[in-house]
Image 1 (cartoon, rainbow, N blue to C red):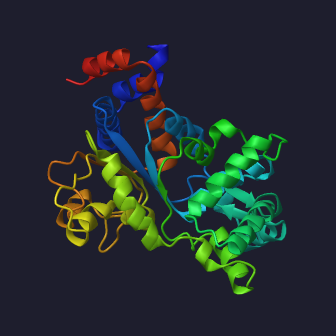
Image 2 (image 1 turned 45 degrees about the vertical axis):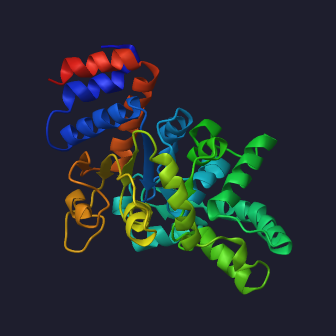
Length: 343
């Protein structure tokens, strides 16, 4: 086994059929797209930041494997929480056997459970609230307007710069910090549906902050029109989706919206599509919709390489990203290995 390509070789050697094959084929197509000079846009739903996807997501962003993102407000803020309060999180590996009384005890201990882990109220939510509220108030006073993620970009860079151990987590495992430092384009559709969306609403309600300081979702799409056209130059930009919902549906709509709403004549379609989802294909479910359905909405075409991996993203995504990082570091060796295993 090649020690420089151990993850890639493992996938190529063992992942032959079913969801394993879909994982292998999606990985190879992703790498080939990057090699041609293409870019990749990630959509991240679920609780991936709490699940510490940043361990592989951050280096992928730093190394040019991810070029733009759409994330839920929860994933955005939870990446920051993991940096600020990592050591204060508590895991619950036996959560499947919990009673209502067990979860009530977690509540009373000021923890907020997310499957088998939990976010600490005081060390995460309230600590970050103390840092960001003055920023909102200053923006209100100065009549500043920014996108939701820009406030978090500024805050996380400031936290990391101070280095007075304002954070407990590893900076190199924080995808939000990596994204902020690279200044990659991000959209955060429906950010109101997040803990800090709620906290912001409370300050707006009491008159301590203005709702106008946070640009709207409509403005996000307006900015994304231009960002997409820039990302899709050359060999185009692919779409890599974890989960479903608004994090995925909002950005993928940019192609038909540019064509039909903005009347732009030449719009490149998405150059690649992969979705990792554990949602069963079902009637009317966006998360469970197959890629073919997106052809009818002019989001993808019959020529778009399409992959669906029906599995747990916390297992699959780190494998794919680790293998891609190996490919980026050792491209010639990686291509030889792929040629050897894929006939």
